[in-house]
Image (cartoon, rainbow, N blue to C red; front, side, top):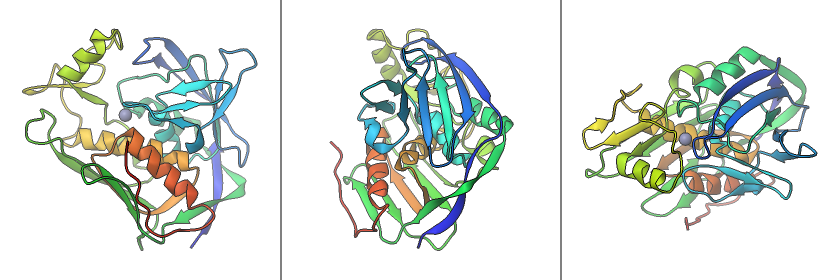
Length: 293
Ligand SMILES: [Zn+2]
């Protein structure tokens, strides 16, 4: 059953500046109010003609470790933490001006974006949006990594993320469950940071990627736990994966009512879920199975 809700945008302009994790390039984001039904739009002000790209599933390209949007005119990278903050803060329409392609890594979390959006305020718009209520189970993935989206009698969207890389991984297994709520996001989910194992971090830096990133800029796990850093939550890693899932799911372009359970999913699988939910827009369909590449 589809319910009517009003769309929202931000009340005031907001800025966030930082450096891209991967490229090291400085970038400033300017969040501007968006028109009703316009959705979330990135605008590359560093390119001639200031091309725009919409934050929707059809613009997503499969990339590991981050979410990239590509159109004929431009691309933007690592949008997931920005998109998660907008979605969780109930913002439907917003122009995100950026002067470089890669979103700022900040402290590896979405906290700076959530705080900026909180300060920007929210403005209800004279337009309704559709909230899609899941009527049938939806599943993407395989037996090792999967996401199921199921109907629920509870209002809103509840997500459970199950992280388990096995007993040999320095990253501890944990599970986080969270019901999306504008009022709690900045405290409970947005501060959870990106994490890597030490060998993953060394591998990236040996390829010349993220050469400026230090142990303090995200959470890097050595054999004895986080190196030169302490966790913000006991379950910080699964909280962060839940944050990524919110950002990737937002590409479905709708509010979702139901429950999502994710087991070891990453950006590519999250993207498949967003596409599958988007396809439900016009008609709910029976259980789907889609396998990750
Ligand atoms: Zn992330």
